[in-house]
Image (cartoon, rainbow, N blue to C red; front, top):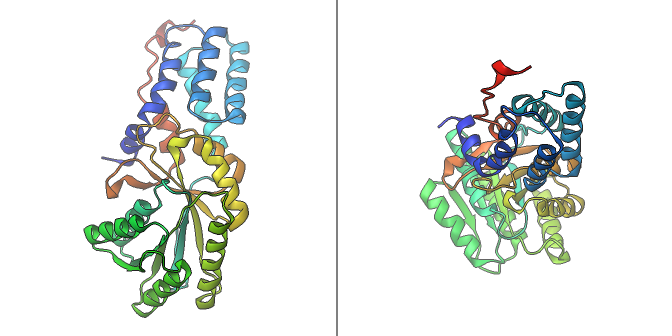
Length: 312
């Protein structure tokens, strides 16, 4: 399955709401009722007030100029606004000169950090890199075992401590192991207790301080893993982690089968953090690089204005 197909399948539920609203315009002229349906569809998909207002504003202006505006033109206007809103959103993960280069994955429990850590390691390994994983979520015993299971399944190297071990110490040992084994990437899965709790942020700060004893530039990347199915609720998480820990990018997970796929637009527009990867399924290969065009096109796929010959 190609990347566009993955995007289209992954966003099918959210896209269905938009296609339904726009589809009613195919062969029909735009009116106030259909505009309201469109607005509801964009809000339901969690694109946020700013983006929804911009899209509806552009559509209203186009309708003012052309009273025969129909579905396909509406979709084209929406795609243009979204492409502009997401300009610069594609993360580019390129390794620098440091070895190992450290990627720290942060986020609340349940966001998908642990599986993302394993899937990212799998992707990097397939690309010819030599990743090593560090199980730094020692607060949750299941997280270590989950990452171990994934590592065994995908033939990835793992450094882990016991349940309740000091997370920063595990990160230190993982860095030392990656350095001695000449691995080029170190991926750290961290704890995810509630983002409003100061002890989690202090733990992350300690982890950073300890890593910087090994390399002053570490962690080179601090990515927030957010559950895309939470919609705009994930925006508050992003705000807090960015303020407290300093983020360099995003990974948006659990977008398969959700109607909340627009949340990544709202998060990007507020924080301007690049989106490196998105999760569109359970398989290791379902963590894919974020592509603006693939995302936008998938939302409006399969819309055909069969009435174009009668447009007058």
